[in-house]
Length: 180
Image (cartoon, rainbow, N blue to C red; front, side):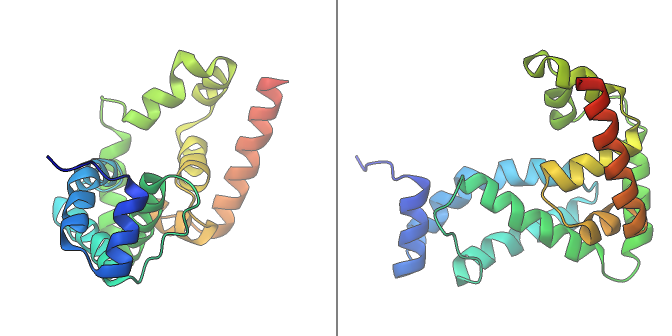
């Protein structure tokens, strides 16, 4: 019976030796989770599947290097979310993105992130976040939770970078007032 290796050990084995078994184990651990998260941002399953493949290909080739700072899942999410933005920047991406966001805005079921943000475990913050308009929450989610730059959030949300900055400023101001 083999011993279960930590995420960090798997990444070190992949980087040092090109260990295929380590790579397969890392993929089994994180690909379903990454796919589910990215599908919360993009309804095009083909694009999401390509982005997940590109993310793990970057890990295998060593073009994405883990510096052993923070959580491996967070590191993979950052790579995947940035690659999703890059994929959506392609020909016709803005139109596809607007359609995907429109579908997401009008769906009845809240995403996992929305449920966590609105959850009781966050106390007063949950109430303050719920009181924000969907546009302001979307900017906070893209820039704070997903860690995207202003430019990347603008592409993802289909709005100008200046609007992202303005909405982020308004959201922070409203949160400060609500939590004061």
